[in-house]
Amino acid sequence: MQEKTITVTIDEQGNSTLDLEGFAGQGCEKAFDDFRGGDSVKVVRKKPAYYTGHVIEREKSQR
Image: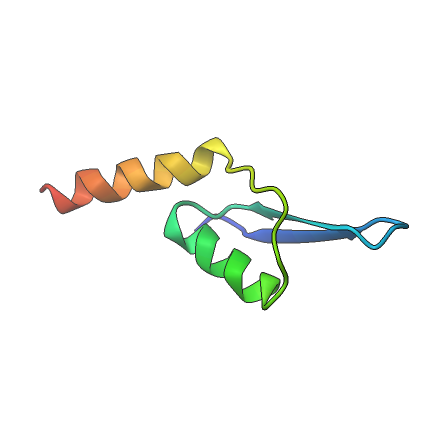
């Protein structure tokens, strides 16, 4: 099983970033939502692993 890492960075102005490594597809979204709580999101950038996770899930469901 691949190791999962969550990195939270807060700058001097109080802005934060959340970087998720080792997650794919909907697992990434769930972890993100859990950390985000009720905070608003300004920018979302999805990594290639997000899309790869969806492709793999779709291929498995067609078998």
